[in-house]
Image 1 (cartoon, helix red, strand yellow):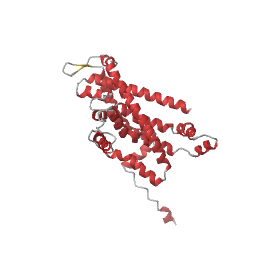
Image 2: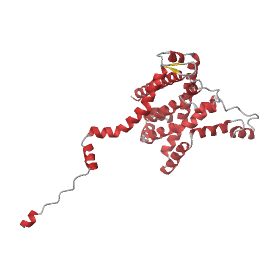
Image 3: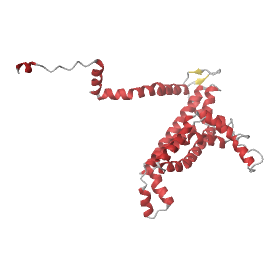
Length: 305
């Protein structure tokens, strides 16, 4: 018995450096938060905030006779933007972006509604169908639209074969072509937020509204649309912001006849080599889009209240 009492339980082996480091991190919440947020914050700092600051600095500089940047503080680049030539380009860009957003909403809402209501096996198939455009390059899809819209393209050939037209209809290098290309490119960005919002909608509220005498239009405008407004707002922002600054689609489908603000910025940087003015236009566009987005969120929040 005395011998048994003398036997001691073996002590655990000493923890290695990695184990002690993990235990030390677990005991300090601030360190854990830094490890989680640190990489993302570092990425934003290096690849977003610092380049943004460089562009901001360029916007207050001047252009030399041969395209070089002269570091002289001036507001000339910002005042130049308010010339009617550039204001017109900006208004055209906003109009095309708004039209694209409205068309995407009109097409995307019914499609998202059907996706949310069909059986799950069909729902997954429709979701894959929405995601298919992301599997190909945006530039390739734009060239595909060009092949459809040209005078010898599929659409004109089909219309002539059906006897609807005798001569090809000019569709390429028009505003119609630009809007069609933007809708085709950004429609999934509208459908996915709408689908996420409609899928969580309680459809028993529709039955309750119908029992109270509401017709189909009243059910949609007074019950379903207000409760799915977060999806509408998210989808509209995801479509409007890239549309207003697009330059590839209007460059290819507009053929130089439809100039948007993105094309203006591209020309200032790559063709005219007026980096200060291009930087100023970029910042004005970003500020206007940011203010518009904040106002849109504010109005949407007040309406929901």
